Image (cartoon, rainbow, N blue to C red; front, side, top):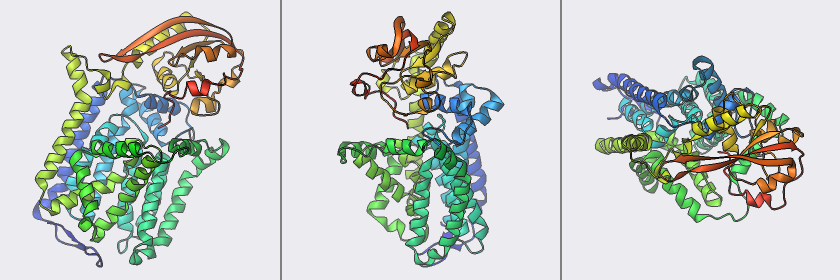
Length: 517
């Protein structure tokens, strides 16, 4: 039964913990440690290569700055730390991801235990750690992996700061929010939730001044990134706006349905169904703990649902909402005596993770090739082979600078080509600055340069007017699964002249993969 008794009008009353409660913290730690150890072993053994965004973050980590074209700097800083200690292997690049999610799970235990009891804390931590989205994010280093522990820490500090004698926790709120903003600008949603919660709760409004002070501390931590944006034309903020893509027709029911359906996969079918049940019959939101958690879950989810309706939304964009939502759903389920339901939810989520990461490779080991469209990791495969082929071509044609016609392609090649071509250049028929390569090493600064051009879109007709000559060199076919893969055409492009692209080139390249996530 709950250790914390809450009502809409009362302060939390801390009851004595049950005798078995003392073991909950140790049980939580043991469960998180075991799951994290499995994930660490998996990233060390997994044969799939880096996702192109991971390779991009690694490249950024080799050029440390206070900001980058599409993201704030915390993830590249973390990669710089882990690779400085353990080298540049794929597992070292990804090392912080499972550790960050383990930290988030530990803080979620503390949130559940503080608002309810240790039992809620234990099941909340275990449920969060086994969410399918968390399993995926523990395998691929991403901004979400850095954001979620900051979000959880800020929420826990916020809970403690509002308690009697808790003023010393407000600086912790500011630090956690500031680090979260350095991880991903979506931390702004946390601030929206916090301000809304205080403004709409009369007895909480007295904390507004303290929250404003915490926000000032957060902005002080973010200041170097703000300065970087100021000196780079607010590149990161413009990239966020480009991602929103709020232009043209602003009603997309299909995108809304797709995003909504994807959330059953992100947090598991039973967990998301539980959240829907709470929203439809919000009796769980009548106590102060449930109401607080709802403020840090539902507004973010509502904002991203609205974004999906107006344009599009990636499945992971609502991930921060599930820090509080996980505790809310677990408390709701345990309050109804549905521990078996939680066991089933966790079992389903773990089975999904095993299928996600193990099924394709297990079938391949017995000679069964899975079609690429059914392989969730197909975009991670083939890069090593491509890198080896391009490395050989560069070695055979000394003096050429690597050029690629796609952001993901240049990111992957920068990592998988040896020696690493940190001077690689991106060519695009679309004018303007759309990624980090065009921001810091724009092709317009390479007039007269000879390139080894690796193309996936094969827009050689648009490239020809910009070079004195282009001659075909090789065709590289990379297989992925039974029927997937890409064909890359390689050219020697000499004497870049810099003429503008053909007028129709932007439309020709509209379907490429340059969208920054």
